[in-house]
Length: 543
Image 1 (cartoon, rainbow, N blue to C red):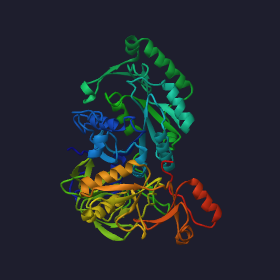
Image 2: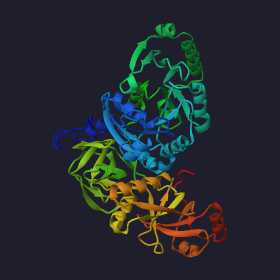
Image 3: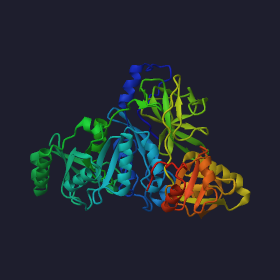
């Protein structure tokens, strides 16, 4: 495995000063790829790594017998089902910079994991299917980017297949999400008859020749405007007319507008045959912002050259089945990280040793000695850490916690074999800590029958799969007829006790009381009859 762009010097070999930290932070670009399922997100992730020379051959489409799986989809269940279930971190070097790419689950059932990833990035690539445009999950994820003030670069994918008109897609972006599109390049040929791309800034033309299976970089042929017009004929003339129209309406890339979340640079291509992917990498290095000061829980900025601080945005167990370890993914927010330094866990005030610090590349990993703002490091055997935790050195800081989504699906889970109860409890506790699912409990139901609360039902499938294959505790579910949850308090729990269509359970990790309701009408009736009761919504998820 190759992990590029990291300072591998010993900790005392220089580069300590504030200026050095700022310079290294300026080289970093940390971004996520977001999309609706089946828009080609994991394929694009693989193509980006291929063009950056981080891998030698791209994985093929999911589900094709005899083909390689994508690097970022490393779980067996992901490979079997052809969907991304958990986020993955890939780090590689490109054009003198260091890119930290966080692949995210596309399915709406795993939106909470995607939200946590978006807490750790400085930019996002919004991936659109050329035939489908903006889809429901894309819209929800864009709303998260807007709330987090994450600037968005748009990549219109699958231009080698039949799809919609490019001007129609731009109009949809502007009308539906209020984001002014600013094309960086423009396709020659309609979707499904992809001839090449015109670079708006220079007028240069790039034609592509696919390699067998799209496993290697596409061959690029560069032509000037005259040669391109002679080669492509009417298709080029149509593209030129569309570009003239864009120039008239002022659809130009504007950095202040982009960084403010008011506009989005747009690029076209096709990830599977690797068309236009190299240009997308270039746009990331040119346009995506480097790490910036992060606001702490009090609203004060933590400068990038301040002493080390990091945000835990993900915890994942059993990435290495041979070692059964637990890895905390930490976004470096400020300062220089040095392996072996002793940090403070802000939630408990306890020291946390970093002897086992690693750079992640999908499931693969490599020891990392030094990291800078924007980097993502994996801290092994991090049993005390949970998503949303803060680690710091020297000067205390705590970043805002990452909110939980409002669950809509609930089920009691039981181990089928009572002799495996210890393994069952260990698995449930682990999955709760990772945030795979919310685990609720009550004295009435007992320790052997916790309630799982999920944004989507596929989370339950992940729980059952991992309980059986990682912890040896085959389990079963009994679905409950609840569809809504609200946070309440002991007084509210007392009012709700015995009420029809409601139940109050304790959320295990934070001890919060969650009131469950069968539907919105039952919730409305309770609120009408008991207006003083505390019923606070959680963060909206996949409603």
